[in-house]
Length: 168
Image (tube, rainbow, N blue to C red):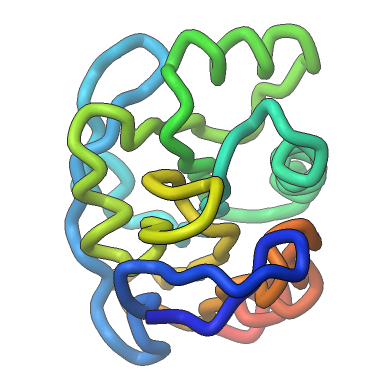
């Protein structure tokens, strides 16, 4: 489990992020149109997995906005914003913000993504939500970078994630 905090209080996740150099795991997540998306739907693209507790919190919303802006400059890259929010809430957020460069995906049905990727909170007030994390993947599905943000209330290191992508 990861050694992270939420509001300065220690919390635990179910495991660890996929290691740099490892192959990304397949997933089944729900898109805003309620279709199921798997890793195969993004085959041949570089990926940034922006994982967070809920789009309805300030820092989570900021990370989605930031990656939406960065997406304009990225070639052959999809930014997957993943939470356990209902797809309806994700869609409403993007519509209200005018965000069209990110792919919103939900782990609300089973929570299996959170378990497989080691980001499901198992303690604290966000128990059963996903911890703020970034996973950057190349076109072959190899993990180039990962970050589980040490304090959930802080933003991820956008610069480091993007540098890993550019240096691939």
